[in-house]
Length: 382
Ligand SMILES: *Cc1c(COP(=O)(O)O)cnc(C)c1O
Image 1 (cartoon, rainbow, N blue to C red):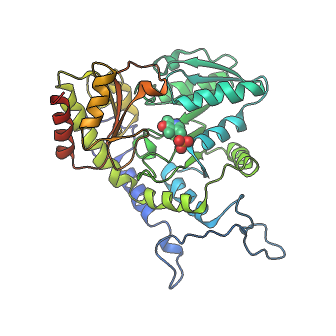
Image 2: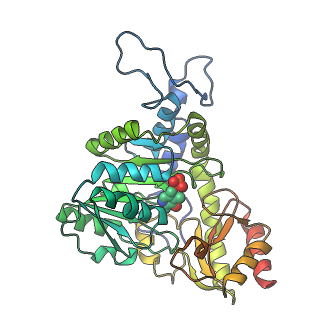
Image 3: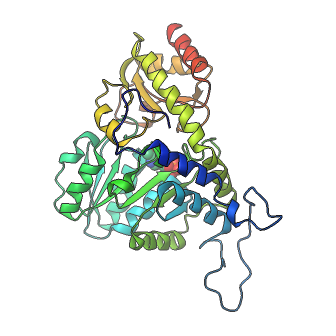
């Protein structure tokens, strides 16, 4: 990962460690290959596996474990430096983490400005099972009362507002209160930010975003260094049945191999684009944690090795935002983020609590100068 403009503190993921992880991830199969075995991961689609009379360690049924999952989980474990479980989607991973740690009469605190489906899962589904749900804005989470809070769910930078919270500080307070901390690390991936290293109990992530990276797979994972949590979430996966299909897992395996490479280009471009947008008169309320004057910058610089691939800003109103997205030929009009194609969307259309002209822009892998010129031309032509 490139260093940020302002340098970064020792506690963000180090370039050396990230480089070592990226290399290990590419070669995780090499050492175990038998002569003549394929270098690329075979796509094994079998739902059942030959069952010897007695061997509880082998694969036996595709809802419990499969060779492709095992390879993807091995890659993820190299990245997270923790046991990982693959899921059918980011939401399936989030469900596993929440349902495995919560129950009747327990309290959950979630970010008021986090991913909308997580909030709905909490209010629509968990509440029905007797979990009480409270919300707090991300930038105020470090001061939230944790008395009686069984699980605290954080998302930093949060989505789509890009506010951040201090993970280490929150974990310290949660420890004192006996609260379990779950972090949604989707926007950063372990290359940019490492919540487990800061003491978070469970990391959840949508691998649909940058890890898959090509807008062709929905997947997610959980990671934890606590075997009790891993066991609980594995049980939830086998019984709940929200499992990734073999092809889906295989695509994620391929995506993960180039994650570090893509992130380097995408974060570099995002930083350049954010600086260009900050000079444009039509752009208001610009947010990118990498900008030195962004309210998120100081905390982000302490805990992130780079500032991510998402930028948000406002144009005059709904029509201006729609026109901008339509006019820029290098921006796909699409939701989601982390893919190789840059994309943008007007978030108010999903009911997010933002202005009508609020745009979330996901920076992809196009060469930076071409992308920035195209976005500048679209803004100037309005
Ligand atoms: C996309 C996303 C999810 C959900 O992931 P799916 O794979 O779509 O289920 C969860 N959290 C965040 C922060 C996301 O961006």
